[in-house]
Length: 220
Image 1 (tube, one colour):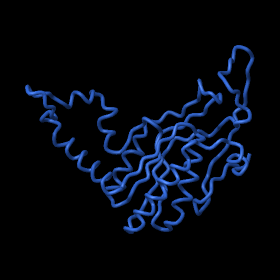
Image 2 (cartoon, one colour; image 1 turned 30 degrees about the horizontal axis):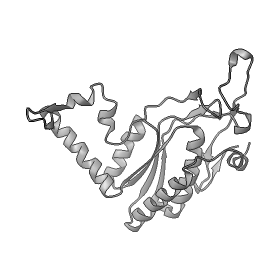
Image 3 (cartoon, helix red, strand yellow; image 1 turned 135 degrees about the vertical axis):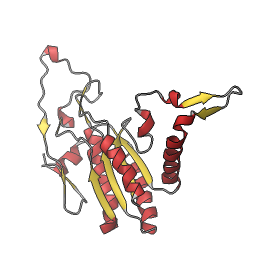
Protein backbone atom coordinates (compact mmCIF):
# COMPACT_ATOMS: atom_id res chain seq x y z
CA UNK A 1 0.00 0.00 0.00
CA UNK A 2 1.50 3.35 -0.99
CA UNK A 3 1.24 6.49 1.12
CA UNK A 4 -1.61 8.00 -0.90
CA UNK A 5 -3.74 4.88 -0.53
CA UNK A 6 -2.92 4.61 3.17
CA UNK A 7 -4.10 8.13 3.96
CA UNK A 8 -7.12 7.81 1.66
CA UNK A 9 -8.36 4.58 3.28
CA UNK A 10 -7.47 5.20 6.93
CA UNK A 11 -9.77 7.40 9.05
CA UNK A 12 -8.02 10.54 10.23
CA UNK A 13 -7.98 11.39 13.95
CA UNK A 14 -11.02 13.45 14.87
CA UNK A 15 -8.86 16.31 16.19
CA UNK A 16 -6.54 16.55 13.19
CA UNK A 17 -7.74 20.02 12.20
CA UNK A 18 -7.24 21.25 15.75
CA UNK A 19 -3.68 19.89 15.69
CA UNK A 20 -3.12 21.63 12.35
CA UNK A 21 -4.35 24.98 13.67
CA UNK A 22 -2.36 24.79 16.89
CA UNK A 23 0.76 23.90 14.92
CA UNK A 24 0.13 26.69 12.41
CA UNK A 25 -0.24 29.28 15.17
CA UNK A 26 2.84 27.98 17.00
CA UNK A 27 4.97 28.07 13.86
CA UNK A 28 3.74 31.53 12.85
CA UNK A 29 4.42 33.03 16.27
CA UNK A 30 7.94 31.65 16.60
CA UNK A 31 8.73 32.43 12.97
CA UNK A 32 7.83 36.08 13.64
CA UNK A 33 10.54 36.09 16.33
CA UNK A 34 13.07 34.41 14.02
CA UNK A 35 13.16 31.57 16.52
CA UNK A 36 14.11 28.11 15.26
CA UNK A 37 11.48 25.41 15.63
CA UNK A 38 12.18 21.71 16.13
CA UNK A 39 9.71 18.84 16.01
CA UNK A 40 10.62 16.26 18.65
CA UNK A 41 8.70 12.97 18.56
CA UNK A 42 8.82 10.75 21.63
CA UNK A 43 7.35 7.57 23.10
CA UNK A 44 5.93 4.44 21.47
CA UNK A 45 2.95 3.83 19.20
CA UNK A 46 0.25 1.18 19.47
CA UNK A 47 -1.26 -0.94 16.69
CA UNK A 48 -4.99 -1.56 17.30
CA UNK A 49 -6.28 -5.05 16.53
CA UNK A 50 -9.94 -4.01 16.26
CA UNK A 51 -11.86 -0.88 15.27
CA UNK A 52 -13.47 -0.77 18.72
CA UNK A 53 -10.10 -1.33 20.32
CA UNK A 54 -9.84 -3.82 23.16
CA UNK A 55 -6.41 -5.25 22.34
CA UNK A 56 -3.39 -3.75 20.67
CA UNK A 57 0.32 -4.28 20.08
CA UNK A 58 2.48 -1.73 21.84
CA UNK A 59 5.96 -0.42 21.09
CA UNK A 60 7.10 0.32 24.61
CA UNK A 61 9.06 3.49 25.24
CA UNK A 62 9.07 5.70 28.32
CA UNK A 63 10.05 8.69 26.19
CA UNK A 64 13.15 9.56 28.20
CA UNK A 65 15.32 10.56 25.23
CA UNK A 66 12.64 12.70 23.59
CA UNK A 67 11.62 14.55 26.76
CA UNK A 68 15.21 15.16 27.80
CA UNK A 69 16.21 16.32 24.32
CA UNK A 70 13.28 18.74 24.23
CA UNK A 71 14.60 20.47 27.34
CA UNK A 72 18.04 20.85 25.80
CA UNK A 73 16.60 22.22 22.56
CA UNK A 74 14.66 24.88 24.47
CA UNK A 75 17.79 25.73 26.44
CA UNK A 76 19.62 26.14 23.11
CA UNK A 77 17.05 28.67 21.88
CA UNK A 78 14.64 26.48 19.92
CA UNK A 79 10.88 26.34 20.19
CA UNK A 80 9.86 22.69 20.55
CA UNK A 81 6.82 21.03 19.06
CA UNK A 82 6.66 17.92 21.23
CA UNK A 83 4.78 15.05 19.56
CA UNK A 84 4.56 12.43 22.29
CA UNK A 85 2.80 9.27 23.38
CA UNK A 86 0.01 10.06 25.79
CA UNK A 87 1.17 9.64 29.41
CA UNK A 88 4.84 9.21 28.42
CA UNK A 89 7.56 11.42 29.91
CA UNK A 90 7.32 15.14 29.11
CA UNK A 91 9.84 17.99 29.35
CA UNK A 92 10.43 19.29 32.89
CA UNK A 93 7.67 17.22 34.53
CA UNK A 94 9.62 14.04 33.66
CA UNK A 95 11.70 14.56 36.80
CA UNK A 96 8.69 13.91 39.01
CA UNK A 97 5.86 12.17 37.17
CA UNK A 98 7.73 8.87 36.83
CA UNK A 99 10.07 9.23 39.80
CA UNK A 100 10.69 6.32 42.15
CA UNK A 101 9.36 8.45 44.98
CA UNK A 102 5.73 9.57 44.96
CA UNK A 103 5.37 13.30 44.23
CA UNK A 104 3.79 13.67 47.68
CA UNK A 105 7.22 12.87 49.13
CA UNK A 106 8.40 16.24 47.82
CA UNK A 107 5.73 18.12 49.80
CA UNK A 108 4.99 18.82 53.43
CA UNK A 109 2.03 20.42 55.18
CA UNK A 110 2.62 23.17 57.73
CA UNK A 111 0.53 23.23 60.92
CA UNK A 112 -1.66 25.96 59.40
CA UNK A 113 -2.49 23.68 56.45
CA UNK A 114 -0.31 25.41 53.83
CA UNK A 115 1.73 23.16 51.55
CA UNK A 116 5.38 23.71 50.77
CA UNK A 117 8.22 21.83 49.11
CA UNK A 118 10.48 20.04 51.56
CA UNK A 119 13.79 21.82 52.04
CA UNK A 120 16.08 19.31 50.31
CA UNK A 121 14.09 19.47 47.06
CA UNK A 122 13.31 23.20 46.86
CA UNK A 123 16.26 24.16 44.68
CA UNK A 124 15.78 21.49 42.02
CA UNK A 125 12.00 21.91 41.86
CA UNK A 126 12.29 25.70 41.68
CA UNK A 127 14.74 25.37 38.78
CA UNK A 128 12.46 23.01 36.85
CA UNK A 129 9.41 25.17 37.59
CA UNK A 130 11.06 28.37 36.33
CA UNK A 131 12.09 26.68 33.07
CA UNK A 132 8.66 25.08 32.62
CA UNK A 133 6.80 28.34 33.19
CA UNK A 134 9.14 30.26 30.88
CA UNK A 135 8.65 27.71 28.09
CA UNK A 136 4.87 27.95 28.37
CA UNK A 137 4.64 31.70 28.89
CA UNK A 138 6.86 32.45 25.89
CA UNK A 139 5.33 29.85 23.57
CA UNK A 140 8.48 27.75 23.38
CA UNK A 141 6.72 24.43 23.92
CA UNK A 142 3.68 22.91 22.22
CA UNK A 143 2.68 19.40 23.27
CA UNK A 144 0.60 17.12 21.05
CA UNK A 145 -0.25 13.62 22.24
CA UNK A 146 -0.78 10.46 20.20
CA UNK A 147 -1.61 6.84 21.00
CA UNK A 148 -1.87 4.73 17.84
CA UNK A 149 0.50 4.49 14.90
CA UNK A 150 -2.31 5.97 12.79
CA UNK A 151 -2.49 9.03 15.05
CA UNK A 152 1.27 9.40 14.79
CA UNK A 153 1.42 9.16 10.99
CA UNK A 154 -1.43 11.61 10.42
CA UNK A 155 -0.06 14.11 12.94
CA UNK A 156 3.47 13.76 11.59
CA UNK A 157 2.34 14.43 8.04
CA UNK A 158 0.23 17.43 9.08
CA UNK A 159 2.90 18.95 11.31
CA UNK A 160 5.65 18.61 8.71
CA UNK A 161 3.41 20.30 6.14
CA UNK A 162 2.81 23.20 8.52
CA UNK A 163 6.54 23.44 9.27
CA UNK A 164 7.56 23.39 5.61
CA UNK A 165 7.38 27.21 5.56
CA UNK A 166 10.24 27.45 8.05
CA UNK A 167 12.99 26.43 5.67
CA UNK A 168 16.34 26.32 7.46
CA UNK A 169 14.63 27.48 10.66
CA UNK A 170 12.84 24.13 10.96
CA UNK A 171 14.33 20.90 12.28
CA UNK A 172 13.05 17.34 12.79
CA UNK A 173 14.27 15.15 15.65
CA UNK A 174 12.27 11.93 15.50
CA UNK A 175 12.89 9.87 18.63
CA UNK A 176 9.57 8.01 18.83
CA UNK A 177 9.49 4.20 18.88
CA UNK A 178 7.23 3.80 15.84
CA UNK A 179 5.62 0.46 14.96
CA UNK A 180 6.85 -0.93 11.64
CA UNK A 181 3.58 -2.75 10.93
CA UNK A 182 -0.14 -2.06 11.00
CA UNK A 183 -3.49 -3.64 10.15
CA UNK A 184 -5.33 -1.78 7.36
CA UNK A 185 -8.65 -0.32 8.45
CA UNK A 186 -10.52 -2.44 5.91
CA UNK A 187 -9.11 -5.65 7.41
CA UNK A 188 -9.84 -4.93 11.06
CA UNK A 189 -12.88 -6.47 12.71
CA UNK A 190 -15.28 -4.09 14.44
CA UNK A 191 -15.23 -5.61 17.91
CA UNK A 192 -12.90 -7.79 19.94
CA UNK A 193 -11.32 -10.60 17.93
CA UNK A 194 -11.41 -14.08 19.47
CA UNK A 195 -8.27 -15.94 18.52
CA UNK A 196 -9.57 -19.16 20.07
CA UNK A 197 -12.35 -19.23 17.44
CA UNK A 198 -9.85 -19.45 14.64
CA UNK A 199 -9.57 -15.74 13.89
CA UNK A 200 -6.40 -14.95 11.97
CA UNK A 201 -4.99 -11.76 10.58
CA UNK A 202 -1.91 -10.60 8.74
CA UNK A 203 0.19 -7.64 9.74
CA UNK A 204 1.02 -5.49 6.75
CA UNK A 205 4.58 -4.29 7.13
CA UNK A 206 5.58 -0.83 6.00
CA UNK A 207 8.52 1.48 6.25
CA UNK A 208 7.74 5.14 6.79
CA UNK A 209 10.15 7.78 5.62
CA UNK A 210 10.01 11.47 4.99
CA UNK A 211 10.86 13.07 1.69
CA UNK A 212 13.88 15.35 1.56
CA UNK A 213 11.65 18.38 2.02
CA UNK A 214 9.68 16.71 4.85
CA UNK A 215 6.41 17.78 3.25
CA UNK A 216 4.85 14.38 2.61
CA UNK A 217 4.87 10.98 4.23
CA UNK A 218 5.87 7.92 2.23
CA UNK A 219 4.51 4.48 3.14
CA UNK A 220 5.76 2.07 0.44
